[in-house]
Amino acid sequence: MEETLSAASSLVRLTHLVHTLYADVGRGCDLTTAQAQMLCSLGNRPTGMAELSATLGVERSSLTGLVDRAEHRGLVVRQPDAQDRRAVKVALTDEGTDALQRFHDELTKKLEQLLTELPAKERDQFTGTLRRIVADAPAVFAD
Amino acid sequence: MEETLSAASSLVRLTHLVHTLYADVGRGCDLTTAQAQMLCSLGNRPTGMAELSATLGVERSSLTGLVDRAEHRGLVVRQPDAQDRRAVKVALTDEGTDALQRFHDELTKKLEQLLTELPAKERDQFTGTLRRIVADAPAVFAD
DNA sequence: CCGCAGTAGTTCGTGACACGTACTATTGAC
DNA sequence: GTCAATAGTACGTGTCACGAACTACTGCGG
Image 1 (cartoon, rainbow over the protein chains, first blue to last red):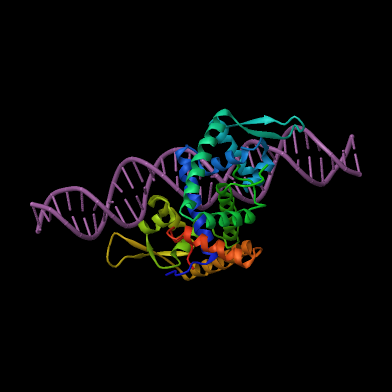
Image 2: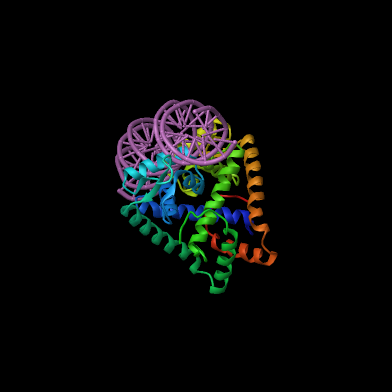
């Protein structure tokens, strides 16, 4: 049916693959996909709702519930913003940091397994190009 | 913050990028992400519920509602299976075929734009490696 | 031919997400 | 001080996903 996959097709399949992995690893850490994404994004530093919603690509109104549930589970806290009394900063709790760590390690391991089959040279070229493509994409997965 | 992104990080960002694109294009065609995925998977041929759920990576019970809503919108139909009276085949309607076509074209265009910045040689190497990685991934996006 | 384990699909209850609209509180510019 | 803009929330609606329990049918062993 497909002797040679188009580039677009391959991209979609890769996305599907990674997304499924993401969901699986998340489940193993008792995190939903959306929660895992949020924790990853918060890994760098506490973030306001507006910025966080822009990074994650969801509406602010959606984020409210997301943070509510995560806060209720003890993964994050809302901190008042010292400069702006309207704003809050969402920050990881210790528990959230632990969950993020476990998630991040596990996912990184599985993702790298995707590439282990490749010869070193090809792998380096691939990841190099990959970096160029995503250079200015949102930081949804901290290093 | 990140002089050099790890391979895993880049993969996650790319996935997020493509996933967002997928959702945006879908919305433009009045399709949810799950619906668009289903249509893409049905593009090849009518498919039974069990096989479809395996391809999409969702439980059969989730798929029932997905097909219900899509059928209600006139995108797909359930056909009786001639060989097995328990089974049904889900097939695209004309309307579903049109929607898939529009979605597929638009998404392909946008995905290829991601790669247009690259020099031809680098792009070819990249897509070549990509194809190897996803060689045995589910066919969630027909060619 | 019968019984029965396995398979195909649905139903039901529950919870998580996502959206848009409308709202409150606060800020900052004029 | 007024007022538009911003930060965040509340609310109603719809979609999606899961697992457990259920019906209908198939195909195998006896």
